[in-house]
Length: 179
Image 1 (cartoon, rainbow, N blue to C red):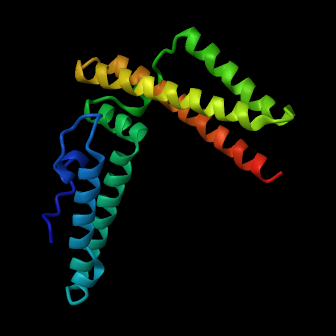
Image 2: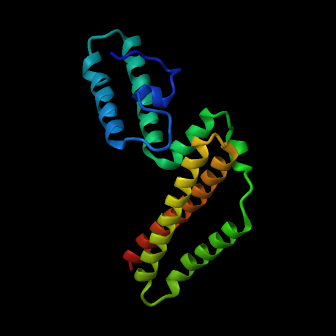
Image 3: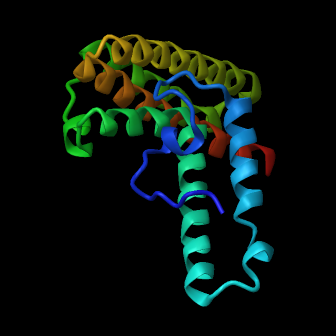
């Protein structure tokens, strides 16, 4: 069994650099390797406490993988490793232009149900939101690498807003498909 070090951070667990841009293929390979090492069949004859530890460590590995695999979760985790609390991240001031843009995008999403052919508009909105997310991911990466945590946190909060909008767009898309 791999060393069960619950105190190592997720990047250390998968032996990858603690940075925003990661090698997703390598992360997946290391995850599968750990999962094989932690498979329940390997502990069928082990003592009950060893079985429990294997289950707990497997849950730790799963949580780490889910966090590092998702860009927004990874960004939040990096900020946490940098010493920022969730409250500090949430208190970041957003510029008025960004907030107005969010309101406009939300209004467009809400008006989709009233359109005769909302699919094309929705497709463009999803592309716009996805593009904006990529822009803020790049902003996060640049700020984080420069150790400008408040700027990185601001980019992260913008990513959160946009991810929520994207989820709403996907929900509307599901509703439209049911028509």
